[in-house]
Length: 257
Image (cartoon, rainbow, N blue to C red; front, top):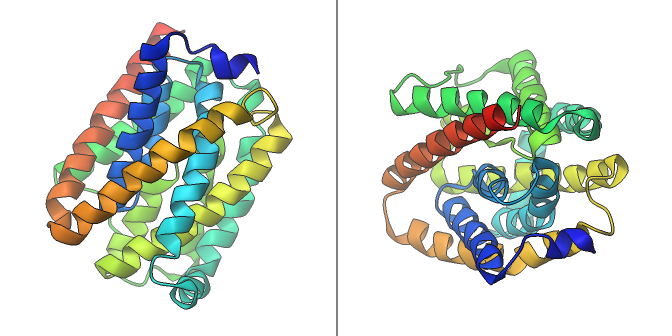
């Protein structure tokens, strides 16, 4: 239980809960970036592997809500349509998750940070990754493998998934649902993988459970905003958040080397 109490005083827990609410809010608006925001925020007050454990259960809970918002039949259709992406990504994620206990914290941060920064910066400049509207099985499997690698090591598999969905011209409501389905299945695999890797264990489960209520509150707020306002403006704000988060991860990686 030490991991549950090592965060510090009340202000420390207040900060941790605020991170979870903020991450849920961003996810409710644009459908992704919750693990990115959470690991960037939580890593400011705890080791990266503990931050990864903390995001696993809230990520699973919020993605289930997002995936089933239009009902089970619509969610199943999304599974059928993107099954290759999810299959390849899931296999790679399980393999990559086993690397976490042996990677030094600086390596984790310096692997994740530059990739997030490059993705967000390129998207803000209008030069984001482009795929053909129908990428074909090889490209879809490749993007799935990249997403699985991100997810297994860091819990973040949003950027390559969003790039694929945007390239295929996915409608807004379906894109939100597909992201929920893909990330939800990925979060389930992440949970299983990190029970095996030892990241999620008796000492870290209480922390992850504590993150669920504020994350659910945040995504509820995000859904309300998304239903009322233009998604494009919020997506641009999210890209700025991703850029800042990526730069912060690089800074922390350099500091702990």
